[in-house]
Length: 346
Image 1 (cartoon, rainbow, N blue to C red):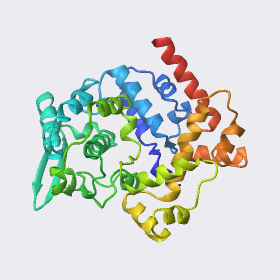
Image 2: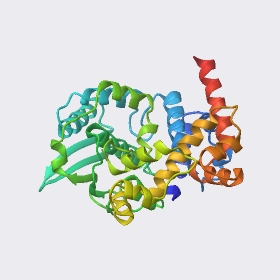
Image 3: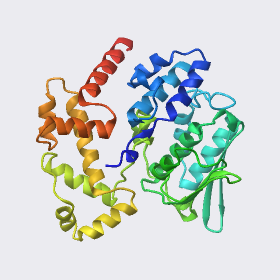
Protein backbone atom coordinates (compact mmCIF):
# COMPACT_ATOMS: atom_id res chain seq x y z
CA UNK A 1 0.00 0.00 0.00
CA UNK A 2 1.37 3.37 -0.95
CA UNK A 3 1.84 5.28 2.33
CA UNK A 4 0.63 8.45 0.61
CA UNK A 5 -2.85 6.98 0.49
CA UNK A 6 -3.38 6.93 4.25
CA UNK A 7 -0.61 9.02 5.80
CA UNK A 8 0.21 12.71 5.79
CA UNK A 9 3.40 14.54 4.89
CA UNK A 10 5.53 15.53 7.87
CA UNK A 11 5.87 19.11 6.59
CA UNK A 12 2.75 20.05 8.57
CA UNK A 13 4.39 19.48 11.96
CA UNK A 14 7.02 22.29 12.05
CA UNK A 15 4.55 24.75 10.51
CA UNK A 16 1.91 24.00 13.13
CA UNK A 17 4.37 23.90 16.02
CA UNK A 18 5.99 27.20 15.03
CA UNK A 19 2.69 29.01 15.55
CA UNK A 20 2.29 27.18 18.85
CA UNK A 21 5.76 28.25 19.99
CA UNK A 22 5.04 31.86 18.96
CA UNK A 23 1.94 31.70 21.15
CA UNK A 24 3.92 30.47 24.15
CA UNK A 25 2.73 26.86 23.96
CA UNK A 26 4.95 23.88 24.77
CA UNK A 27 5.53 21.92 21.54
CA UNK A 28 6.59 18.75 23.35
CA UNK A 29 3.32 18.63 25.30
CA UNK A 30 1.35 19.14 22.08
CA UNK A 31 3.20 16.28 20.39
CA UNK A 32 2.68 14.08 23.42
CA UNK A 33 -1.05 14.80 23.42
CA UNK A 34 -1.19 13.99 19.70
CA UNK A 35 0.70 10.72 20.08
CA UNK A 36 3.62 11.96 17.97
CA UNK A 37 7.16 11.06 19.13
CA UNK A 38 9.19 14.00 20.41
CA UNK A 39 11.93 13.35 17.84
CA UNK A 40 9.61 15.05 15.32
CA UNK A 41 10.89 18.32 16.78
CA UNK A 42 14.17 17.51 15.03
CA UNK A 43 13.26 15.11 12.22
CA UNK A 44 10.10 15.63 10.16
CA UNK A 45 11.08 13.41 7.24
CA UNK A 46 8.53 10.74 8.20
CA UNK A 47 4.77 10.61 7.67
CA UNK A 48 1.90 11.09 10.07
CA UNK A 49 -1.03 8.81 10.69
CA UNK A 50 -4.28 10.73 10.04
CA UNK A 51 -5.17 10.16 13.69
CA UNK A 52 -1.93 11.86 14.77
CA UNK A 53 -2.53 14.87 12.52
CA UNK A 54 -6.12 15.14 13.73
CA UNK A 55 -5.00 14.90 17.36
CA UNK A 56 -2.37 17.60 16.80
CA UNK A 57 -5.06 19.86 15.34
CA UNK A 58 -7.34 19.14 18.31
CA UNK A 59 -4.52 19.94 20.72
CA UNK A 60 -3.87 23.27 18.98
CA UNK A 61 -7.60 24.04 18.92
CA UNK A 62 -7.87 23.35 22.63
CA UNK A 63 -4.87 25.48 23.55
CA UNK A 64 -5.49 28.40 21.19
CA UNK A 65 -9.29 28.31 20.63
CA UNK A 66 -8.52 28.94 16.96
CA UNK A 67 -9.68 26.59 14.20
CA UNK A 68 -7.29 28.35 11.81
CA UNK A 69 -4.36 27.42 14.12
CA UNK A 70 -2.69 30.84 13.84
CA UNK A 71 -2.36 30.74 10.05
CA UNK A 72 -4.89 33.52 9.38
CA UNK A 73 -5.11 37.24 10.08
CA UNK A 74 -7.77 36.65 12.74
CA UNK A 75 -8.66 33.53 14.75
CA UNK A 76 -11.75 31.45 14.11
CA UNK A 77 -13.30 30.30 17.36
CA UNK A 78 -13.42 26.53 17.84
CA UNK A 79 -16.89 25.30 16.93
CA UNK A 80 -17.35 27.64 13.98
CA UNK A 81 -17.01 24.95 11.30
CA UNK A 82 -19.48 22.55 13.01
CA UNK A 83 -21.92 25.45 13.40
CA UNK A 84 -21.62 26.15 9.69
CA UNK A 85 -22.25 22.47 8.94
CA UNK A 86 -25.46 22.58 10.97
CA UNK A 87 -26.57 25.66 9.06
CA UNK A 88 -26.05 24.17 5.58
CA UNK A 89 -27.66 20.82 6.32
CA UNK A 90 -31.09 22.37 5.78
CA UNK A 91 -30.21 23.28 2.17
CA UNK A 92 -32.08 21.47 -0.59
CA UNK A 93 -29.12 21.05 -2.94
CA UNK A 94 -25.35 20.94 -2.78
CA UNK A 95 -25.13 24.28 -4.60
CA UNK A 96 -27.31 25.94 -1.98
CA UNK A 97 -25.29 24.35 0.81
CA UNK A 98 -21.93 25.55 -0.53
CA UNK A 99 -23.30 29.04 -1.19
CA UNK A 100 -24.77 29.25 2.31
CA UNK A 101 -21.52 28.01 3.83
CA UNK A 102 -19.48 30.59 1.93
CA UNK A 103 -21.89 33.32 3.05
CA UNK A 104 -21.64 32.07 6.64
CA UNK A 105 -17.88 32.71 6.70
CA UNK A 106 -18.24 35.98 4.78
CA UNK A 107 -20.41 37.30 7.62
CA UNK A 108 -18.08 36.10 10.38
CA UNK A 109 -14.61 37.00 9.10
CA UNK A 110 -12.65 38.55 6.27
CA UNK A 111 -9.54 36.47 7.08
CA UNK A 112 -10.66 33.98 4.47
CA UNK A 113 -12.96 34.37 1.50
CA UNK A 114 -14.95 31.50 -0.03
CA UNK A 115 -16.88 31.83 -3.29
CA UNK A 116 -18.92 29.43 -5.40
CA UNK A 117 -19.40 30.28 -9.07
CA UNK A 118 -20.35 28.53 -12.30
CA UNK A 119 -19.22 29.07 -15.88
CA UNK A 120 -19.58 26.99 -19.03
CA UNK A 121 -20.81 23.99 -17.08
CA UNK A 122 -17.90 24.05 -14.60
CA UNK A 123 -18.36 24.87 -10.93
CA UNK A 124 -15.57 26.70 -9.11
CA UNK A 125 -15.12 26.77 -5.34
CA UNK A 126 -12.53 29.44 -4.61
CA UNK A 127 -10.53 30.15 -1.46
CA UNK A 128 -8.61 33.34 -0.75
CA UNK A 129 -6.60 34.17 2.36
CA UNK A 130 -6.41 37.85 3.28
CA UNK A 131 -2.81 37.42 4.41
CA UNK A 132 -1.43 34.33 2.62
CA UNK A 133 2.04 35.06 3.95
CA UNK A 134 0.81 33.72 7.31
CA UNK A 135 0.45 30.30 5.69
CA UNK A 136 3.84 29.79 4.00
CA UNK A 137 3.61 25.99 4.12
CA UNK A 138 0.02 26.10 2.81
CA UNK A 139 -1.21 24.00 5.75
CA UNK A 140 -4.32 26.12 6.24
CA UNK A 141 -5.06 26.31 2.50
CA UNK A 142 -4.72 22.55 2.06
CA UNK A 143 -6.79 21.80 5.15
CA UNK A 144 -9.65 24.18 4.27
CA UNK A 145 -9.90 22.93 0.69
CA UNK A 146 -9.80 19.28 1.74
CA UNK A 147 -12.42 19.75 4.45
CA UNK A 148 -14.81 21.59 2.14
CA UNK A 149 -14.27 19.04 -0.65
CA UNK A 150 -14.90 16.12 1.69
CA UNK A 151 -17.89 17.96 3.22
CA UNK A 152 -19.40 18.46 -0.23
CA UNK A 153 -19.02 14.75 -1.00
CA UNK A 154 -20.47 13.82 2.39
CA UNK A 155 -23.52 16.05 1.99
CA UNK A 156 -24.65 14.23 -1.17
CA UNK A 157 -23.18 10.85 -0.14
CA UNK A 158 -21.19 10.39 -3.33
CA UNK A 159 -17.73 11.14 -4.63
CA UNK A 160 -17.39 14.38 -6.58
CA UNK A 161 -14.91 13.99 -9.42
CA UNK A 162 -12.72 17.08 -9.61
CA UNK A 163 -11.82 18.22 -13.11
CA UNK A 164 -8.77 20.17 -11.93
CA UNK A 165 -7.46 22.52 -9.26
CA UNK A 166 -5.74 25.91 -9.38
CA UNK A 167 -3.27 27.19 -6.79
CA UNK A 168 -1.99 30.74 -6.52
CA UNK A 169 1.50 29.64 -5.45
CA UNK A 170 4.38 27.63 -6.98
CA UNK A 171 4.47 23.82 -6.66
CA UNK A 172 5.41 23.06 -3.02
CA UNK A 173 8.06 20.47 -2.09
CA UNK A 174 5.26 18.06 -1.13
CA UNK A 175 3.46 18.47 -4.46
CA UNK A 176 3.00 14.69 -4.75
CA UNK A 177 0.67 14.90 -1.76
CA UNK A 178 -1.85 16.89 -3.79
CA UNK A 179 -2.61 13.92 -6.03
CA UNK A 180 -3.94 12.10 -2.96
CA UNK A 181 -5.76 15.07 -1.45
CA UNK A 182 -7.41 16.17 -4.69
CA UNK A 183 -7.31 13.37 -7.32
CA UNK A 184 -7.15 15.40 -10.53
CA UNK A 185 -4.71 17.56 -12.56
CA UNK A 186 -3.19 20.49 -10.66
CA UNK A 187 -2.12 23.92 -11.94
CA UNK A 188 0.19 26.15 -9.89
CA UNK A 189 1.15 29.83 -10.18
CA UNK A 190 -2.45 30.70 -11.05
CA UNK A 191 -4.38 33.87 -10.23
CA UNK A 192 -6.60 32.03 -7.73
CA UNK A 193 -6.83 28.93 -5.55
CA UNK A 194 -9.89 26.88 -6.42
CA UNK A 195 -11.46 23.46 -6.95
CA UNK A 196 -13.25 22.78 -10.25
CA UNK A 197 -15.93 20.14 -10.93
CA UNK A 198 -18.98 19.46 -13.10
CA UNK A 199 -21.61 22.09 -12.32
CA UNK A 200 -24.41 19.54 -12.65
CA UNK A 201 -23.35 18.17 -9.26
CA UNK A 202 -24.60 21.40 -7.64
CA UNK A 203 -28.20 20.37 -8.35
CA UNK A 204 -27.90 17.08 -6.43
CA UNK A 205 -29.93 16.92 -3.19
CA UNK A 206 -28.43 17.04 0.30
CA UNK A 207 -29.21 13.59 1.70
CA UNK A 208 -27.66 13.57 5.17
CA UNK A 209 -29.53 13.63 8.48
CA UNK A 210 -28.92 15.51 11.72
CA UNK A 211 -27.96 12.27 13.45
CA UNK A 212 -25.35 11.54 10.76
CA UNK A 213 -23.99 15.06 11.18
CA UNK A 214 -23.64 14.59 14.94
CA UNK A 215 -21.53 11.48 14.33
CA UNK A 216 -19.33 13.32 11.82
CA UNK A 217 -18.82 16.29 14.15
CA UNK A 218 -17.77 14.01 17.01
CA UNK A 219 -14.98 12.69 14.75
CA UNK A 220 -13.75 16.06 13.50
CA UNK A 221 -11.30 16.68 12.03
CA UNK A 222 -10.33 13.01 11.59
CA UNK A 223 -13.36 12.18 9.45
CA UNK A 224 -12.10 14.49 6.69
CA UNK A 225 -8.54 13.11 6.66
CA UNK A 226 -9.55 9.52 5.89
CA UNK A 227 -10.53 8.67 2.34
CA UNK A 228 -14.33 8.25 2.45
CA UNK A 229 -16.25 5.23 1.23
CA UNK A 230 -19.70 6.15 -0.04
CA UNK A 231 -22.84 4.09 0.31
CA UNK A 232 -23.59 2.27 -2.93
CA UNK A 233 -20.12 2.77 -4.46
CA UNK A 234 -18.23 -0.23 -5.82
CA UNK A 235 -15.56 0.16 -3.14
CA UNK A 236 -18.32 0.07 -0.50
CA UNK A 237 -19.67 -3.17 -2.01
CA UNK A 238 -16.18 -4.69 -2.01
CA UNK A 239 -15.61 -3.68 1.62
CA UNK A 240 -18.97 -5.14 2.63
CA UNK A 241 -18.12 -8.43 0.93
CA UNK A 242 -14.72 -8.66 2.61
CA UNK A 243 -16.11 -7.89 6.05
CA UNK A 244 -18.61 -10.75 5.75
CA UNK A 245 -15.88 -13.36 5.52
CA UNK A 246 -13.59 -12.13 8.30
CA UNK A 247 -10.04 -10.81 8.07
CA UNK A 248 -8.07 -14.03 8.51
CA UNK A 249 -8.58 -15.35 4.96
CA UNK A 250 -9.54 -12.57 2.55
CA UNK A 251 -10.39 -13.67 -1.01
CA UNK A 252 -8.47 -12.64 -4.11
CA UNK A 253 -9.54 -9.84 -6.41
CA UNK A 254 -10.66 -12.33 -9.07
CA UNK A 255 -12.89 -14.18 -6.59
CA UNK A 256 -14.61 -10.97 -5.49
CA UNK A 257 -14.92 -9.80 -9.10
CA UNK A 258 -16.66 -13.07 -10.03
CA UNK A 259 -19.13 -12.62 -7.18
CA UNK A 260 -19.88 -9.15 -8.54
CA UNK A 261 -20.37 -10.58 -12.06
CA UNK A 262 -17.38 -8.85 -13.62
CA UNK A 263 -13.81 -9.67 -14.57
CA UNK A 264 -10.87 -8.89 -12.34
CA UNK A 265 -9.63 -6.39 -14.89
CA UNK A 266 -12.98 -4.54 -14.85
CA UNK A 267 -13.10 -4.47 -11.05
CA UNK A 268 -9.54 -3.13 -10.89
CA UNK A 269 -10.30 -0.41 -13.44
CA UNK A 270 -13.55 0.70 -11.78
CA UNK A 271 -11.93 0.86 -8.35
CA UNK A 272 -9.22 3.11 -9.81
CA UNK A 273 -11.95 5.42 -11.10
CA UNK A 274 -13.18 5.70 -7.49
CA UNK A 275 -9.64 6.51 -6.35
CA UNK A 276 -8.74 3.23 -4.67
CA UNK A 277 -7.33 -0.27 -5.25
CA UNK A 278 -8.33 -3.73 -4.08
CA UNK A 279 -5.14 -4.16 -2.04
CA UNK A 280 -5.71 -0.76 -0.47
CA UNK A 281 -9.21 -1.77 0.65
CA UNK A 282 -7.84 -4.99 2.14
CA UNK A 283 -5.10 -3.13 3.99
CA UNK A 284 -7.55 -0.53 5.31
CA UNK A 285 -9.83 -3.24 6.70
CA UNK A 286 -6.94 -5.11 8.28
CA UNK A 287 -5.60 -1.91 9.81
CA UNK A 288 -9.01 -0.93 11.22
CA UNK A 289 -9.57 -4.42 12.64
CA UNK A 290 -6.08 -4.51 14.12
CA UNK A 291 -6.61 -1.14 15.80
CA UNK A 292 -9.88 -2.36 17.34
CA UNK A 293 -8.19 -5.50 18.68
CA UNK A 294 -5.23 -3.56 20.04
CA UNK A 295 -7.60 -1.51 22.18
CA UNK A 296 -8.30 -4.72 24.12
CA UNK A 297 -5.31 -5.09 26.48
CA UNK A 298 -5.92 -8.82 27.03
CA UNK A 299 -5.42 -9.58 23.33
CA UNK A 300 -1.78 -10.41 22.56
CA UNK A 301 0.07 -9.05 19.55
CA UNK A 302 0.38 -12.62 18.24
CA UNK A 303 -3.39 -13.08 18.47
CA UNK A 304 -4.04 -9.79 16.66
CA UNK A 305 -1.66 -10.84 13.90
CA UNK A 306 -3.44 -14.20 13.44
CA UNK A 307 -6.91 -12.63 13.50
CA UNK A 308 -6.12 -10.35 10.57
CA UNK A 309 -4.39 -12.99 8.48
CA UNK A 310 -0.67 -12.82 9.36
CA UNK A 311 1.12 -16.04 10.21
CA UNK A 312 4.04 -14.27 11.91
CA UNK A 313 3.84 -11.42 14.40
CA UNK A 314 7.04 -9.87 13.03
CA UNK A 315 5.48 -9.50 9.57
CA UNK A 316 2.34 -7.99 11.11
CA UNK A 317 4.37 -5.50 13.16
CA UNK A 318 6.22 -4.38 10.05
CA UNK A 319 2.97 -4.02 8.09
CA UNK A 320 1.23 -2.14 10.90
CA UNK A 321 4.09 0.34 11.17
CA UNK A 322 3.95 0.82 7.39
CA UNK A 323 0.18 1.50 7.61
CA UNK A 324 0.24 3.82 10.62
CA UNK A 325 3.75 5.03 11.39
CA UNK A 326 3.62 3.27 14.79
CA UNK A 327 4.29 -0.25 16.03
CA UNK A 328 1.29 -2.14 17.47
CA UNK A 329 2.78 -1.73 20.94
CA UNK A 330 3.20 2.02 20.50
CA UNK A 331 -0.38 2.35 19.24
CA UNK A 332 -1.76 0.37 22.20
CA UNK A 333 0.23 2.43 24.70
CA UNK A 334 -0.90 5.70 23.10
CA UNK A 335 -4.54 4.63 23.07
CA UNK A 336 -4.42 3.61 26.73
CA UNK A 337 -2.76 6.92 27.67
CA UNK A 338 -5.46 8.85 25.77
CA UNK A 339 -8.21 6.90 27.54
CA UNK A 340 -6.68 7.61 30.93
CA UNK A 341 -6.37 11.31 30.07
CA UNK A 342 -10.02 11.42 28.99
CA UNK A 343 -11.10 9.80 32.25
CA UNK A 344 -8.99 12.21 34.31
CA UNK A 345 -10.45 15.28 32.62
CA UNK A 346 -14.09 14.10 32.47
